[in-house]
Length: 104
Image (cartoon, rainbow, N blue to C red; front, side, top):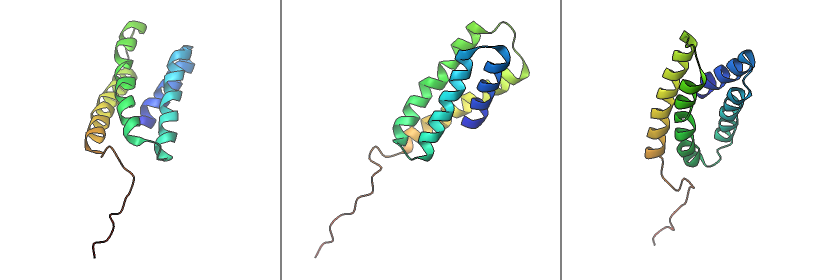
């Protein structure tokens, strides 16, 4: 979902000549890189929710015409928000692996 919305944003930003839209797509790419580097995933989930959600009002204000690709992107973003929320709620706050000392 991150790849789909990121690619759509980069493509739309380039085609429409809107650098902020392109930067939004680059932001998704950056988050994906951090995810694969296993960098503070729970924080990524938490930040990803408002980052994705803010795309909706910006889209409504900035666009004058809406096409099929726009609606597909927004559907992907709704699903992404739900997945991020689920991941955030179901990921322990301390994901470091620790071992308890063995009892004698």
